[in-house]
Length: 104
Image 1 (cartoon, rainbow, N blue to C red):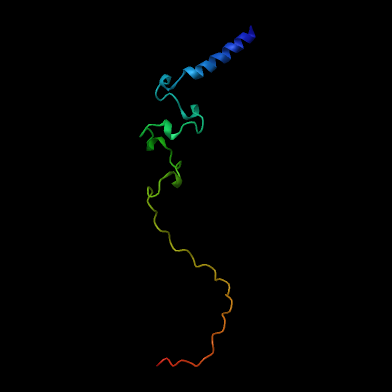
Image 2 (image 1 turned 60 degrees about the horizontal axis):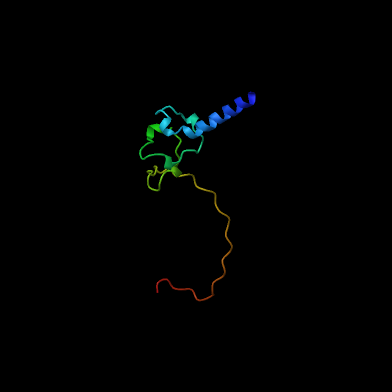
């Protein structure tokens, strides 16, 4: 008898998964806790179905936007001067010749 109850219980939930569709769900009755992560994609949404009120502050990254969609921020202040670099290698000696007269 217990075995039959198990089969009925398991069969009932499996059947429900195939019978219940989005048409059977009342609007606004599902929450984020009811949906598995990454189970909804852009193809599942209609145009303009998600608005700014639906997105929490801080959830979007710059990579979520197309190039040119975000305004460039203000320039920051100039930083302090960096350390001096190492001395370069000595240059080669030029060809010896007469000194040039700068006046012509």
